[in-house]
Length: 229
Image (cartoon, rainbow, N blue to C red; front, side):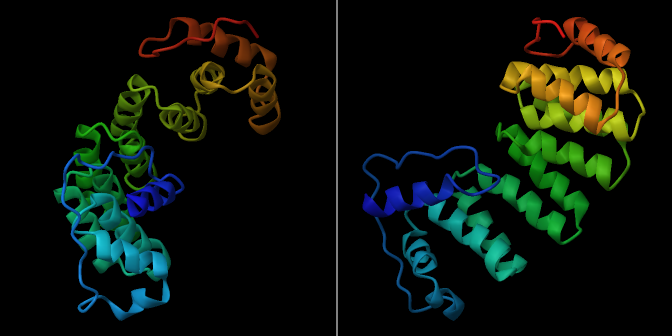
């Protein structure tokens, strides 16, 4: 039980991870022998522990995948461990598979894994798909489609992403400001949002006002900020 608590604590700090799963009730803990372990892991006690626990906990296999991806930069091994975690039912591993294939510049495979993660309702997956379509393929239609899927699931990352797309790529600052203003409903202060629009994007009061008014009626928003500008 102590090992699982350590694993969950570490997972809560990893980027791309938005939640943790509970240990299956009554599942037998299997300690994997370190006989066949990658020698590179021996310098990292936490990696050795993840290896030992990987047959019992998909979170441990996921942690190894993350470790190989971000510490050792061994993408081949990272894919192996993320797949093991995914096959054991840890859906967030599919999202991270997408990030590995992005690192490898295999963007079609990246999108494929992000879509698998999105179908499993992993929070950041729609935003990641949208970003690849925008940044790599310049396919703004598909990018907007996936950002909107994320917005329907109340992802502030998708709201930010679509706002930047309209500002940088489509030159529609009214719609861009509408999405940025909507972030007030997700915890940003009105003062910060207005300052950002004026100082970062250099928008006029008139554009900001039109953005606010659009935000009140624009379809597809689960929440609307109605506090005025």
